[in-house]
Length: 346
Ligand SMILES: Cc1cc2nc3c(=O)[nH]c(=O)nc-3n(C[C@H](O)[C@H](O)[C@H](O)COP(=O)(O)OP(=O)(O)OC[C@H]3O[C@@H](n4cnc5c(N)ncnc54)[C@H](O)[C@@H]3O)c2cc1C
Image (cartoon, rainbow, N blue to C red):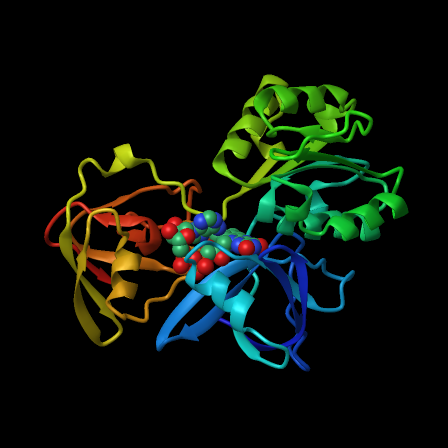
């Protein structure tokens, strides 16, 4: 795994409890990335290693710095550390960029209509894609549908307004507010959630729908509303990309899971950890201070892949199919023991 050490050169406040951290490119081996990918940051906090992915909010070939935008999560260890403690000139270890929530030139030949659906901090990868497409891929149209509670919560408010002015014929923005009484005079500002009914209304205004590509990043409800409406217009799966910041777990899937012990071999070291019901094998290992490999924690990147030597595990919340994974392999971030004799090797 390629690890880079990046220097913080600027920190910008974007909205309440949201900052953008700007990293300088390394002098020699540059970090290359695609719009929509994420950077995985590694921190050591109170003696324990924490790894968290953050989507690039910068766009390659447009922005000078590598930028991530971090929203504080209540009681969240790393998001609060970044918001409260990170400072200019600090050095941060990062993994090479990953992720397939990307704008791909090869799939996007001529004059596509790119519809970006986001809420809250879900705007970050969408911003990267929007800036890249508008600045570097003229010809495509962009519609941004962006939900927030209030105007004060809007991340990149000024940047979005600048883009609207500069690319007035290419970019249209619909702002949704759940906690703001919206003045009806402004048709692009809508009160309420981005619900299935409103999604349908927006889609009816997209004249070139069959030629559209959709990127969704936000809470589960947003993804479901948008997908449901897109399917009703017979938009195919290939035209829809979605990114989750959190692993979605269905409680019903845990009915056959109980607290069990799991043996983990990491190179020469063997450890036994208690995996309390509800925790993944990765979470249990990290709580036991094992330095296990991981990155996205949502079952996408496969950095936490392990071989199953004994026993049975159940994968929960895995939305992506990994055709390259063998039958005796699992992703520890989504793996839960189903038998008492589980032994994994990493
Ligand atoms: C591919 C990917 C890209 C991401 N990009 C961004 C980004 O651009 N900006 C950004 O701010 N975050 C982003 N995240 C989320 C980020 O990686 C962390 O999960 C988040 O900052 C919380 O970490 P923490 O250590 O503060 O919280 P933790 O200490 O890990 O968790 C504390 C509590 O908060 C809950 N929680 C964890 N994550 C979230 C969340 N995202 N929202 C609400 N509750 C949560 C947990 O269930 C837990 O109960 C991304 C995640 C993924 C998988």
